[in-house]
Image 1 (cartoon, rainbow, N blue to C red):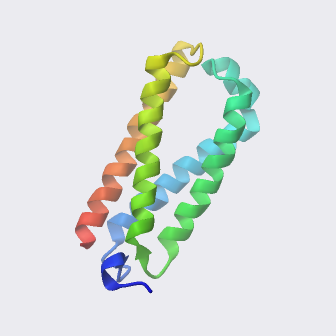
Image 2: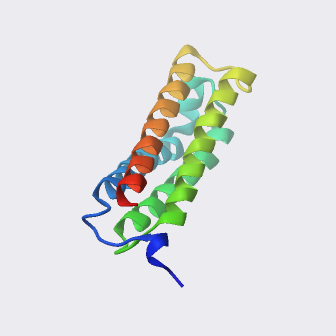
Image 3: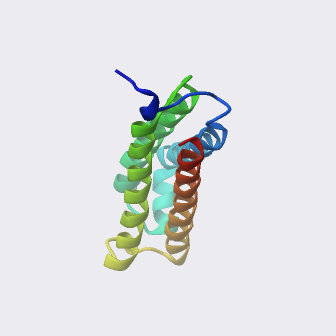
Length: 136
């Protein structure tokens, strides 16, 4: 059973939250499609193996679809948004670990990509948190 405390009740109440989820979906989906279509090219440009980019791309496309579905529901599930925030936080942490641990021989462009994505995902996460607070 869904309670009022676990969902955001109206479209107007969740305007910022829906915006943040949709922007995250657009960014994630676009990245995912590019990784799937050009993993070999990107691998060379960024110093990331195509075998790493294909599953990341597939995950991002699926994640984007889930975000769009969540944002379009009449009632936005707060627990589901919590999962989105947790996934985004894990992405940022994994990005930092990738840089620090040196898992791959990143090019300068690859390092810039990882940093830029971590910053953008952190921004989406901050917007989603603000949207949740606004709807509380």
